[in-house]
Length: 324
Image 1 (cartoon, one colour):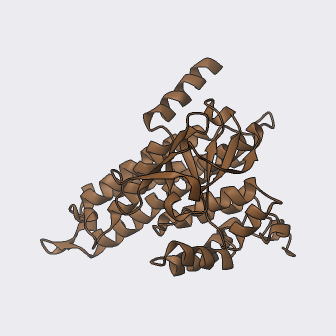
Image 2 (cartoon, one colour; image 1 turned 90 degrees about the vertical axis):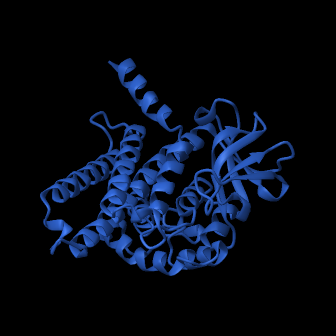
């Protein structure tokens, strides 16, 4: 970009990106990829040489939040991560241009010959999986999806199923070093924390509108003290998650990168609380297509499962105890 990064504000960029996200809604995955690519969203953190905007992960975070808030059913976070991880290669350029799509399997590995919790893989060209059994401490391999056996798991979400992969005949397209893979996973934790926080923010906005316009016994629901108390608690939980996630972007007092896992674990827990309370305040209508809060709840639960569910919280606690 010709404009220096310091002249841009991530929040302002996200406001403009919301229009492209809304335009991508309801389109096929490939059409949505072209819309988001034309708006510069998939390549926001990719180098300019690859056709990207050459911005940092701090600019990708508010875009992830906007995607969660607007209930985008497209693996935008994965595209932003892959273009950044494979910067300077034709892989990055193809994703930035919207010509190809990639997914990421958050569990399993090439060494184990299976992987899973990969969104939209059956509609993608490539999928990134860990190389060895060590998971995040190992490198990663980008595989050609056309040579894999895919099993769609609709248990969490029949519309956006998690995909499990049989890797016996996998063809490796490219590889990441252990250091690059660890960096990708950390940035994924930041962006998904932003995504679920955005989803929580969207649920709060929809709930605020509902309780302000829903009249019972001659008064809007928002006039009831109990409803106001719950709305305040929901807003507080969302703001805690947002602040914790942004704090991870800054180095700690020793100049080192902060651990992103506590922010992700907290954001998931807070978002699940907010979604469930939002559905409650909608009188259960959050499970209907009229009030599709269930979509955001499914997304939060799928991300929770992909990163180990309660295991993530236990790992954060264990590392904290060991650090004392």
